Length: 405
Ligand code: CTP
Figure (cartoon, rainbow, N blue to C red):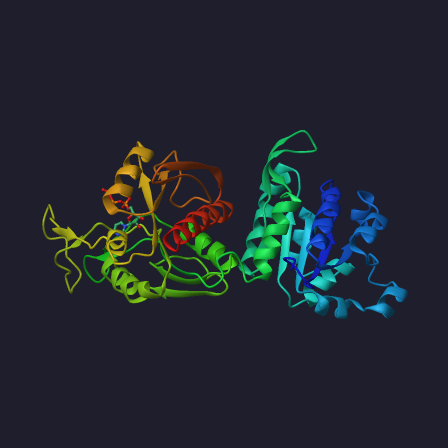
């Protein structure tokens, strides 16, 4: 049996030099017994001929919304209903912009708007176009609507520049398609995450907090959900929208976060502690606003429970992943934390005025596990989250396989 027996995949091809790679992608999908239909935008046919894609897919290639002969054979709405998955590869900056704004001004965008099947875009463009604020805002909109963005990859580009913008390789797109259509790589896996800051009250109007925005934790929750996991997200106070398909539990204090996590942990296979939990809380919480009567004010603090260490000490523990935000020597301190808290994996990053981390859209991480490490270079937190989820999934699967053999 092949991996995509009788699955119906609609490939959208937009204008970009990476269009030549969609020929190979279609060949690979057909080799796995998928049924493939191809829709090209007018610009795509400047880069590859419809004839090539017709020969490879075994079906006529559609290019126009107003082609009477094709519409009579299979109308565009039927075509949208026909697909189990729509994969637009390559997806240009223009295509992303049009989908983000709900335009239906050619056959491909009309189909995407009418379809209920999952929509995946594999972006391919010049690195500066990818980094452009407009493209990033469109990417964010698409991701928030549950559209899957696979890639882009980093490397040298046809235009001679180097950076993020290359389309993922056809073999990688094939593997992801197989995972997606079987419910995702982490289908059936329960993931529990903490995110954001905590607030430790001093009196009814004041609290001890920190600069965490929750962006990394929410990006991770989104990436886990996209990989097919059942995701529960325990979040401190943040201004982030809840990712599609994620169950969110809002808390304020570290103690509340601890209770929520312990309530949910039995049903999870992977626990990721991304929250910036306050290590201490005021011993006394005043029930009325403190007045400025004294020149100096002492607030006594007591330790909060360590949620990550508590989860890692459970018997049996889930696969546990921690974060270590450090202002200096991140890898050294993170490795100490990994050992002390007995977690499977820890992701270290530098925080502070110059380095970023908190309140930023980009981050870089060093991931450490027993006997290995991996650098994930500076990138948008959404892209970084996808990479981290892949690393976590690999190690989770390895541990699970070892325990079951
Ligand atoms: N963490 C937690 N509960 C706490 C404190 C931290 O679950 N009460 C988790 C964080 O979510 C993170 C990891 O532990 O995944 C590391 O947190 P960090 O604050 O950097 O480390 P600490 O152990 O608190 O050490 P220190 O503050 O001394 O650097």
